[in-house]
Length: 71
Image 1 (cartoon, one colour):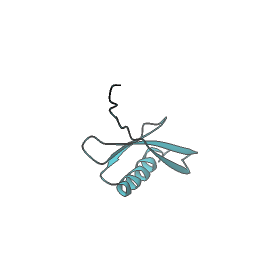
Image 2 (image 1 turned 45 degrees about the vertical axis):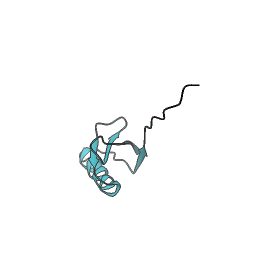
Image 3 (image 1 turned 90 degrees about the vertical axis):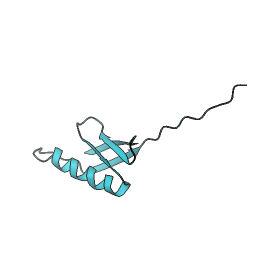
Image 4 (image 1 turned 90 degrees about the horizontal axis):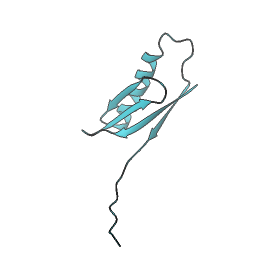
């Protein structure tokens, strides 16, 4: 089982991550801290489950608005 997290920039800085299809959320100031927090959150969320994710994918999404001059 693979668990995919959507990662976005947090408004106050750092990162916010949420699992797709599961109620697993976490945040962190750095990418390394986020990786550790995601692993811990997944471990806690699936603690009593018979099937646990074997892989975690972090999908970083960055929104950027680019103004275009009117022609």
